[in-house]
Amino acid sequence: MQAGDTDRLLMALRRHRPDASAIAALRAVSGGASQEIWSFDALLPDGPLEVILRRTRQWSETGQQGSAGMAAEAALLRSALEAGVPVPEVIGELLPSDGLGDGYLMRRVEGESSARAILRDPDLAQARRTLAAECGALMARIHAMPQAKLPGLRCGGATQERRHWEAAHRANRTQRPVFELALRWLAEHEPAHSDPAVLVHGDFRNGNLMVGADGVRAVLDWELAHLGDPMEDLGWFCVNSWRFGNVGLEAGGLGTRAQLFAGYEAESGRRVDAARVHYWQVLGSLKWGITCDAMGLAWRNGSDRSIERLAIARRASEVEVDLLVAMSEIRPASPHERASDEICAFEPGNPESLPASAEELVIAISESPPTSAAAGEDRTNRDARIGAGLQSTLAREREMGARLASEEADRIHRILGMQVELEGLRAALCMAIRNRKSVCDSATLNAHLWATALGQLAIDQPHYQWRR
Image 1 (cartoon, rainbow, N blue to C red):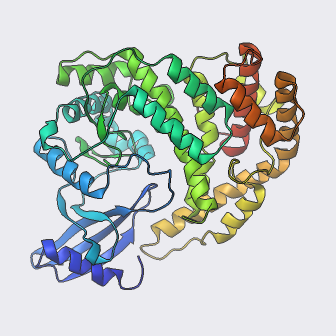
Image 2: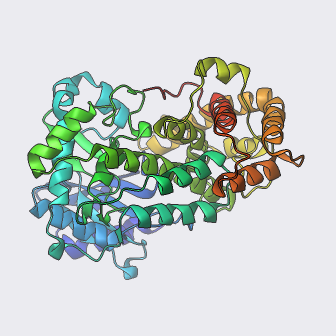
Image 3: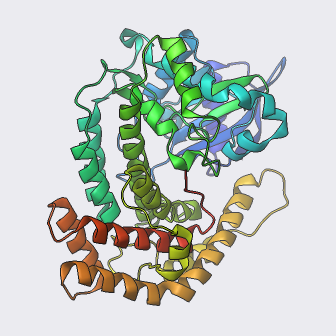
């Protein structure tokens, strides 16, 4: 918030609650990677009203492609509440004259939204027993919402979504052979048919739920809602990134696919197509990786210099490993041994197509704030913790980067027979995969992709859990 924003926020609130006399306890909420989230108390004659402000964060040109928009989000929340889906109650939308950007106000829902806490908090142990099935049932309820009552939304089935995210990847200008292989896999395994288009939440996952001892209290973050294949939501829920270390529980780290599917089928009366769910899981992993790249570019081009952007960008290496697993390509016999014996990373090159260089990590770390013990400094302390984590990444980068880049270049040279700089080799390999060149022998290519992905992971996220 900038100077004067609190007064502007109070004036905006008074359009909907004229009895509000003041705003107290205004603070940025940890999380909100794609949008800004602020919490505050509206002081009313009969006591404080707990309010959340959600507004657009303009962090990149490609990162929010497909967003429904704040007005549509608010309309969707109203429709969802009417349909019996637990969501926050909308108080009202911001107007351009408010000078606060695009967003809306809603009542705060009490509960736990931290994905890791939902998976581990002892107080939620009873709720966890049925959360996977409950999430399946809630997806079915969303998919059944009458389309006549929905705001204007884009419509995207498998073909449209694949092309949409391929265009986003091209716009990022990143050279990632695993992403190219995933795009090829998706084109080759596209479902021959799907159910009639329904409302798809688009980001239904652990981390976008408010959970209490009684179960799910609110489904949050509707910005990616659209009309499409109902199996998309189930596939996204099963992406490994949203299991937060509970790799064996494929339904969001909360339960099994069988539990998720049973909850969905009981509520909807519709059979789950497991093959289509798997397709959407692969596409889901890919789109998260593309979004990670977009966040890194947002930091680099100055549209959002928060250290969280750069930290999230480093998670693209997790996605590469998850994609190789999900596509059931050839896997190394001893993956963790490969992570130490045959690993590779990058060396600084084209700034538009590489992860953050060591120099950029140094800059980001220097810009991160120190920890604070003051009340309301949650976001500051979060950024400080992220900066400390990147310190470790930087140390691993300096220790292994040059040698691993050389090993990666040697492998690609053996595949393609070319001798150019590493970024040129990556670009040539991406093109060969895209064009289905026979030079990319399946076993040789996949051995290289595994070595590269696990090597980058050893630098970025050495403790990431990826085996099913």
